[in-house]
Amino acid sequence: MLIMDSHTFSRYSIQVSGAVQRVGYRHIVQNIARKLHITGYIENLEGYDVHIIAEGRVDDLDAFIQAIRIVEYPIEVEEICTVEEEYKGDYSYFAVIRGSPEDELAERFDTAIAIFSRMERKQDISLDKHDTSISLQEKTIGLQEKTVGLQKETIGLQKDTISLQQETLTEVKGMRSDLDNHLNKEISEMRMELKEIRTALINYGIMNAVKS
Image (cartoon, rainbow, N blue to C red):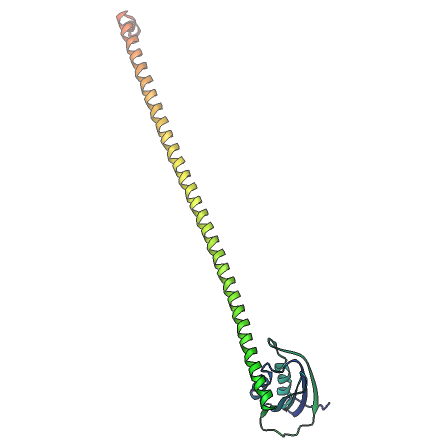
């Protein structure tokens, strides 16, 4: 393997294994290469693998290797074998090497089906998340309703407490009024008795005798 710094140009021969044919993988790799300023090409091999020749700066090539390691349905990269070669500068852009028109047409149909399938999976995931969100909202509403119920019960208890306090206050006031009336009656009776005793003492001359 050649030893180069990150700013040196190099060339990688790459073989990618996995579910990488007839799933739109070549076009995704081409777009990644364009963004990373990688030149070269990608082509289908007989069987299931694809072959890539990539030229560019070493740091860009390393980023390219990481970016093409895609595991997202329907694409599933299982293995990437890389051989570093001497940089030649043979390419001005990154190309997709196509097969026969029949093979390419069939691959386009397969790619379209794969894209629709991926969209359906994402839509299903989105719907699942939406259902989960609705479920959480319903649970939140349920908790809010329980909280409101507890608040109402608390208010009810507060009202009962206030009512008891008012009843107790009324009873205390009533007891004080009864006690006052009773005391006033007893005092009035005692005054009458004292008045009668005084009158009797005067009649018998005892009061005068006492005064003298």
